[in-house]
Each structure stands twice: as C-alpha cells, then as structure tokens.
Length: 450
Image (cartoon, rainbow, N blue to C red; front, side, top):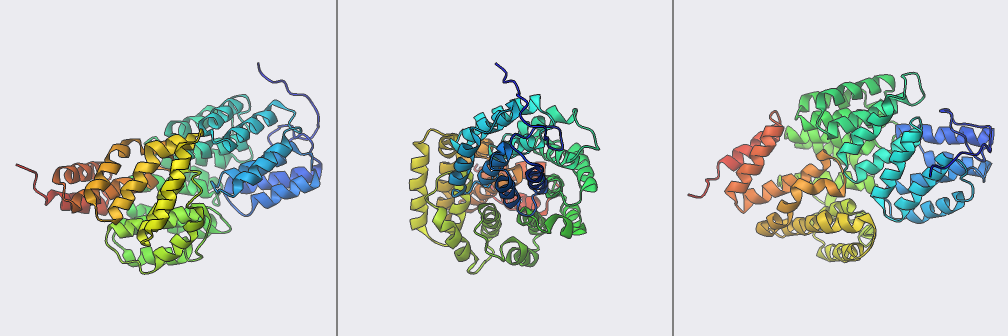
C-alpha cells in the first residue's frame, strides 16, 4: 500500500519536496549540504550538522547525515549513520522521507540491493528528488550494477528540464551510466554537456575520463583532464580519483616519471587515510608493480594506513585494495588478518557475504599468490572471477586491475594460450592503447603448445 503524505510543514526544498521539521535557516544549511554533495565538494556533513543543530526535528537533515556517513564505505561511519537513522525515525512523516529512512536502514544492515530497489521505487514517485537519485547511483556503483547506473537516471531524466537546480548533476550521472554500459559516444556527449553547465562537477568530469580510458584515447584523456584541473580538483573530495584517471593515461603511455610525480603529489602525497583515496593509491602502485617499476618505500606508508582497517570486513572491494598494499609492503600477517575478516564477513547475512564469497576472497588469494610468485595459483584464483568481477562493485576501469594481474601471471608462468587470449581481448577493446599493444606483442612471442 502506498504511503500518503501528511502536510506537516509549509517549507519545501528547491525541488518542491516538503521538509518536515525544518526552519528557514535549517533549510538553507540543508540545501548547501546537498549542493556540496552534488559537486563532491567541501564538507557537506558539516553543513548537514548545522541543519540539525538549527532544527533538531528536521527529518531529512538527519537522513542526509546518515547517507553521508554510509557512502564513503568507512567502517567508522556505520555507527554515526545508525545514530542519525534512529534519530530520524520519529521525524519522518512524508512518504518521501519514510522511503529515504527505509533505504538507509537497509544499507546499515548491509542489504545493498534492497536499498537500491527502495530508492528506485522512491525515484519513480519523486523523480525530482536528486538526493535519492544520487545516493541510488552511488549504491549502483558500489554493487557494480551497470544497467541501473544507466537506467536509474534514464527513468528520471525525462521529468527534468535544463533550468532545474542540479540538472548538471543529473547529466553527469547519466553520462557515467552510459559509459559503464558501453555507450561511449553518447556518454561523452552528455558528460561534456554537464561540465559545460557546471565546470566544478567532478563526477561529470570523471564520466568523460572513463569514456576516454575505456577507448584507450590517452592523448584526448590527458588534454581533457589538464584543460581545467582547478575546476574539478579545487576543494573536491573526489579530486584524488580524478588525478588517478590522469595518471592512468600517462601510465598507458609508459610515462612513468609523470605517474610517480602525480602519485607523490595530488594522488597520495598527503598520505590520506580516507578509504576512497587509499583505493586509488593501491590501484596505481599495483599497476606499477605489475610492470616491475620500483616504487621505493611508497608501499609502506600506504600499508600503514590500511592496517587499522584490515579486520573491518565491511566491503569486499576495499579488502582487495588493502591486500594489494599488504602484498606490496611484504606483510603476510596482515593478509592473514584480512582473510580472517573475510571469514567473518562470509558468515554474515548482508550482501557483503556474497560479494566476498564470490569475488573478494578469490581476488585476495590471487593477489597474495602473485606476490609470492605463484603464478599458477594466481591464475587459478582470478580466472573464474574476471567475467563476474562487477559483482563486488567498482567501475570497469577499476576492475581492469584483475585482468592486468591475470595476464601478467600468464605471461610469467608462462601460459601461452591464456596470455595470448587475454591480451588479444584487451587489444580488441582498446585498440589504440599503447600498453594493450605491448601486452599483445609480449604474449604473441610465446609459442602455443604443439
């Protein structure tokens, strides 16, 4: 039965949704918070806190605090999200507020897919609810659901017009969904349009970066990212990931000095302990590791920051990147801690139990085997999960590290048939990529069995 809204306040957000319990001042803080979130800029959590302080009975301010604590996949954020969710419970009066509250509760319980569906239904009834679209889009990313990354936004975009607040963000999400579904041409058009509307939209910037990465257009990618870096990096908590994309283009061109310069500067010069930043750092150092590039003591600093999270076991995608750091730094004891945490995760009831069982555990074992030089064991672990890697989240560009590790293990074993097959697949998809061509040439030098 569909919940009915009860008019309890005359105040609405800028898209016309009622805001239960909000004063005019609290509404301003809330709008600032969601505006910052659209740009992945500044400190939206601080603005949400100000909204709660101004109006303690403001339902959506508490809900927003919960979302902001959940979407970073930080283990420490779970308790804060749960507290905000509990506080919001008696305050949520409208169907929209109750829908958000239900989805937050599902995500707190680790029911990622249920939360995605709850938000999908909410967006059908409230297509102008940009917060619901954005958090749903992020959950689709964390669950690797490429179709929903595209179609969640496609369902709503027809209800929007260009003059509406936040329209650029809608286009940026649409562009990323199109890219993840392989519609590169249209994704690039929409992503560039979003950035034209709002140059500080770092998600739209990143959507175009993904298009260019997937097509191996390294020159275009470097030009795109270097054209206006101040716009997408200034005061942006998504800046590290976009700098990582720039480094990927330089890495593809074997411009290692530039990659290390970016790593030691905007990617990990600050040695951040934020999970999303550490994921990018691990992913870049591992790619260098696969190529045999010496990285000095960089692994140590990164592994030190991953160490306190080794026993968290809250998200399998994070576990894989922690494993890269522990392997790179030569810390087998931390790998064992990680495996113990995965054992507990797989015994749980949330979706991460399946993420870990199907993908996360084999990936960690494969990475550990690669670190030990056991190429056959690495292949045995990774080969079955390559085609289903999306099930533990991330983007095609991020999960590409699994294919890169697999083909490198096949080249080193050697397994000529597998090396030639995987490298041929890569060259077919990224024909203009210098590194794809180099892997193909290495593999073709191996002779198939008679």
